[in-house]
Image (cartoon, protein in one colour):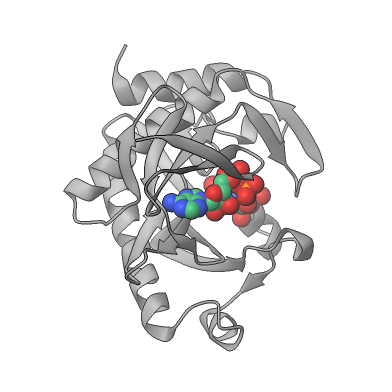
Length: 236
Ligand code: ADP
Ligand code: UDP
């Protein structure tokens, strides 16, 4: 496996070509952004936590029948993944009210739902990732009807697996964002990352926030929260 030219630099990761056209290398940075890009900073060690945690969770999901982009961890910050064409939807699953859900509907954070919810936003920074429903996604040809059905059922399956796993670490999985992509043969697989950047984690006993909300909300203890999640997942 040979690392070639940089294809893309995003807010949190860089993507490199390899000598295999079906594989890319993702490299996790410590850069953090929030509030639609308005807030910028670094979280020391975040790239390592997100890379290793995401890889661990993707492998757990594979064992539970969810196809993912994970191929091989190269180092603390770099991983080989299957190259996909990303479906431009941010898929958000919620088990408990928080963040934009609480704001949008005028309810407090922490309401436990009887059933998980799903929502989509159009992954488009210029438009500020507007919320849309499956009909809008179809109208905009972002995905086919079959792909949307597949994405929905995969996203709920991911929730079942992750919720149970984090519960065993005394962590409640509040909500999270997923991205899916199409491989060369058109198969839909889980891509991007699953980490404290993309999930809300609350300690099940104390309610303490162990995720990027500590950065978004200037709560302090950001690095410690990422480290705490890392040690719960991997043990000390
Ligand atoms: P952003 O683009 O939102 O700033 P990142 O900094 O995380 O996000 O950049 C990583 C980019 O790589 C994202 O645009 C993401 O959709 C994309 N990506 C994630 N997984 C894959 C994959 N397996 N193949 C191709 N692109 C991917
Ligand atoms: N999320 C994400 N990227 C985004 C928007 C949201 O990873 O661009 C995650 C976020 O970390 C949270 C969940 O999706 O776990 C729901 O986020 P919400 O819609 O409440 O928006 P936020 O308040 O995080 O901006």
